[in-house]
Image (cartoon, rainbow, N blue to C red; front, side):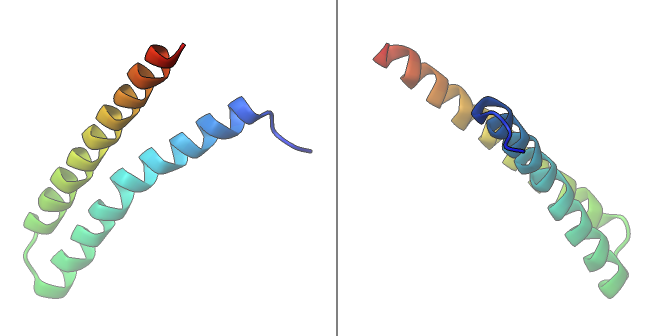
Length: 71
């Protein structure tokens, strides 16, 4: 069964947001455990994830503005 194109677009966006937030936090967790620097790795990983999330939101907003200008 194929998903409609609109659903696939939003499913991919959800996966991208989840990856942007989870991967840096997990990386910080493993850095904390390896170097015994708790909680600084998770804090830095969270900040990196949030910066990536806001960069994604800005990119999506810019794409939306550009697509509205073309119409």
